[in-house]
Image (tube, rainbow, N blue to C red; front, side):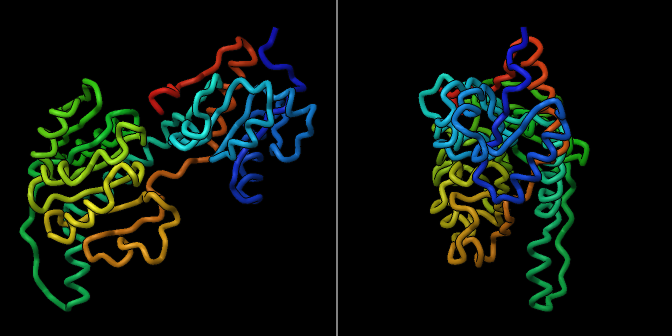
Length: 319
């Protein structure tokens, strides 16, 4: 017997605009034409009661509560910390997107913006504005130590791209992990050791209770003078006031920030005008609808066939 009856609808739940919601539904429907995928708002009470599966993108938790028999929530995003917080103590199974295309896109972004800092592009842009002609001494990639906070799928892909570009690569994780060609560290003591030998720090960690505010004033002070920073994870992982203070003091040379505690970044926020900050609009690794939809479709077909739920999020840990 199948785990999900063919006539049972799948709700798509999102707080995005109508156009984006329709684009997602179209992509998902194309990937699994045997299903009926409908916006949650269009389902009546009987259909909501039939729903066992919901596909979500930044959902309103109140919408999920309208489905009394819901078993499984499949996100089309890799980051699910907000959803985990909204669900709280829940028996729901939760799946976040694990997409090799997303990992490749993130690795490309990490390499691109590491090269941006490695080749002193912020400095040359400033010198151009000042009409100042002066070349910086060249530093070999092998002499530049790039440290990754997070060695999951994204971190491993980023490490491989950096190694191919000949950078010396460090990596830190909460518990011990190994990655080919990477000097690895773990735990609080390992974090301190890694920071002390870092030229460019790249944050790829999930946001959890343990990582919120992890990179605070004390940890920033462990970095060598004039180290640089890239945050492609979540804004609250880095203490905002401590980051500004380190940049103001020249302790940090430059920061590339793609994520913020409040998004879009408010017009009056300090990073916009800080001379040592590059602001990006959360664009480092956008989800590809086609590959994401294919992965969701495969997981749902497996569930129909065997009842297996591809849950990969521990609600207690937050990721």
